[in-house]
Image 1 (cartoon, rainbow, N blue to C red):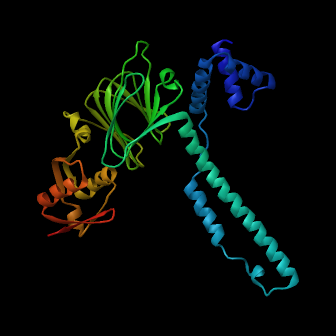
Image 2: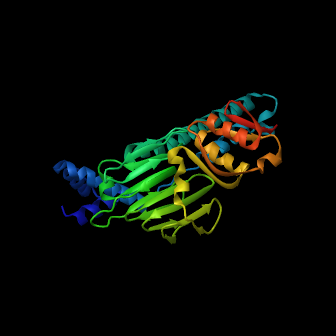
Image 3: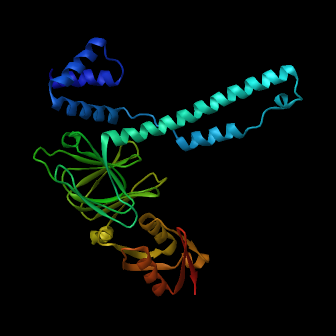
Length: 335
């Protein structure tokens, strides 16, 4: 079958509109050639990008479920037991128990399907706290993954046809240029993505903000349902969580934004409270301050630390503070 024809038939199949004859054609087509399976998953990925699936808010569903679970029975149900009330009460309890089980299964199935979908269609590269990882993708693109970060790369040869990856965390990309000028897209967990054709940049994609630092080449940032921003070398764009517009600035030293590759931390007159966010992201440690004034103390310069102990030893000397660790929390107090 011609590629355009099979694409249309597959899209109808993914939409649930394929006829029995079309389903049989797809079955036979998949048996013809191993490459057809790769093309099948490529079109599936393309169809999913055009038809975003609904993913429920598991946390909200769980809270609602707990609310129903903890809601006491009505006054009518709490009356002194009679034969009629006992039967009625048992029926109510049975119905409530049924819905509790059904709600629990729905929550578990939604979360499981989302988890399985990512693991089936994507190869996952994940770094623990305080460690980085260097990767070379199948197209030659080089990636350095920062600590506490995850990169999802499509399986089954889809990546060669459609260079699209997912990032949760922070990474530096050195994208390989292709002869046919094939684009390379890095998507994040929210409505924010970077599209390039061959360049070097750093993408920071965490809960409180998204940040792109362009070292070489040219990229286009897409965000909030269609807004676009073209970047040039030296540009830095930041989209803070909840903001409606990008913050665009210039820098003469893009290397400081990837200092983490050498286990270095760069701060530029940064309040200690803000620096603690970086500490938590990189080492997984929460910082608690003995007083509000200490949280406003500022840091500047480079700090080299492969381990959290090295970082806090330097901090103790520099700011003349006491450092005490209890579990995953670091307590800082003025000497």
